[in-house]
Image (cartoon, rainbow, N blue to C red; front, top):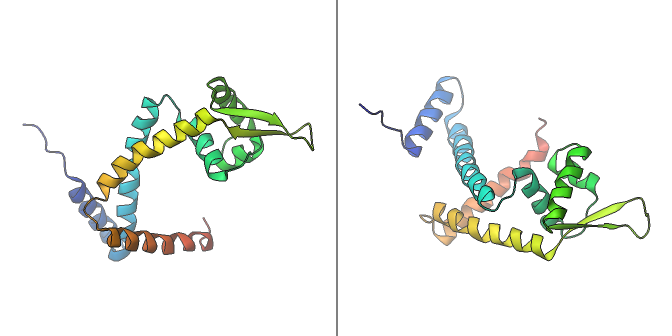
Length: 168
């Protein structure tokens, strides 16, 4: 007999019950477990999406860092933002530059420093990925009204504001 795969809500309830049985506070565990489950499921989808775009997670981290910065960054800044060694960043930048997604330009004020910028092709890739993921993300949130989405976003932003106060 084939074993039934538990649904996402069932897995969530089981995990919360386990954490509560171990001494966790139920309302906290419900929120944190839900956020972790959502993140895990979306990450699985994003990995497939990146494979379809022929981009590694590390390369995507560079593309998104440059897109969010809105200005050229140095390889060292990119290494810091993506938590990799500078030598790994050089390899990533080489691959991205070969594909025409980023360009390196010398700093006019300091010829030993290089700036990295997204090319138009890099921005197009970023935009395509965001539009594609927006479809899935919208599906995930489809049962919430615009008002509920706004409230959920506001509440999560309150939690995010506390992250800097917590020492890891």
